[in-house]
Image (cartoon, rainbow, N blue to C red; front, side, top):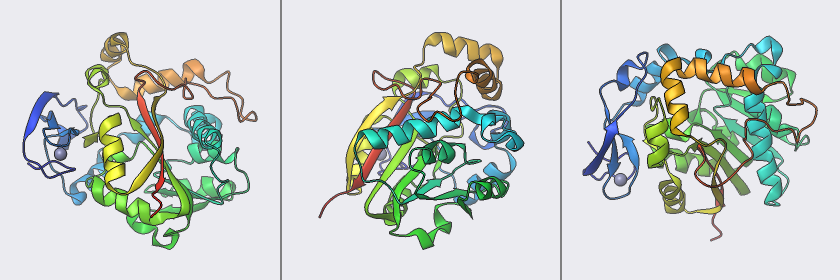
Length: 302
Ligand SMILES: [Zn+2]
């Protein structure tokens, strides 16, 4: 096996890769760390065809998110909050007001909805493999593109904010993905990306590693972006923190789906839909090894 990032062939073994029983193609794997670039990854390579089949036929997306689109956006205030947190960060860095915003892997559009409350004048596009997203985005006057990064060539060079939330850890070829995303950016455009923070403590706490292929930490994420000629404007950990207590609770609850559903029910009541500054689930907290990595980067001046 070769490193998913740098093609090196020597690894340190970290631990068993935790795959839930649905995730057949990820079973009996190990989590390893590349001895050259330091990237944590599964010790297997997959073809795009294998992964596409997995996301269409095995991945338990709906049981994880428990959304009911007829109640949009109230049905997922977690993702609305995340969109607000990303927009707030964009504001804090005093970046130019975006005219064109794209969320690649937008789910049902909750994150984009939360983001758009901060920049209502922008033009929004959601990209997703699930055709059910279209009806929801239409109601918001957002564009919808069916598919993924390979299906949005018409946006090349035009995107002022390219959001990907919990996508980068799933892609089969991270180098190609970064290049493709870079090509979408306008001259002043930025990436706003979020993904799990896979530092050793979080990896040990996390009940489920599947279906992640590359498990980024703050160092490897910075490296891959800089290797591709991006300037990192902001990079920190964000969101809740893990404790070993969480890990035990999750063991008892058995599936990530039930755990996240439970989390929604506990905290949804106090988040206002109309107040864009209302952000729940600790999604606007930063620093000191939280669960997610959040990064803003732009193309370097040449
Ligand atoms: Zn490597």
